[in-house]
Image (cartoon, rainbow, N blue to C red; front, side, top):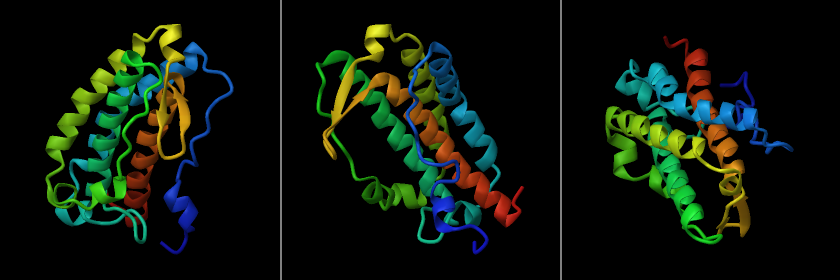
Length: 181
């Protein structure tokens, strides 16, 4: 992929930037992005061959298969983090090593269909819980142990909408570059 620089391959839609204002329109739009992510992802990957699924989206990057499984793992962690923030006072969440997880056998070899199904149910639940957060719920927080950052639930909505779009762009950029249908 010599035409595209590595930074553009890593961040095809740019890095996440938190807004200054978490308006109800912003939050509703981001929740809709999360709710539609599984369908948008499936439309891009369901017809790919095994060889295509095992193609890295960039040099030294994950394969499309790994990206799909990573999205499910990351967004499952998102769901659990929201539940912790809603039921505990500013909990310190458990971090995980996404690189090590991506190298496990299931992420390297498992078919994508079960993960696509998991994402459908998970994102229905994410959308449901997010759409029912009160103003005070949106202000609830958790601590991420990697940098001791305090994360409000309203920020998490935007961050995970970006995360899904970010990885979907990895796939669509590769498909376009390779001229895959």
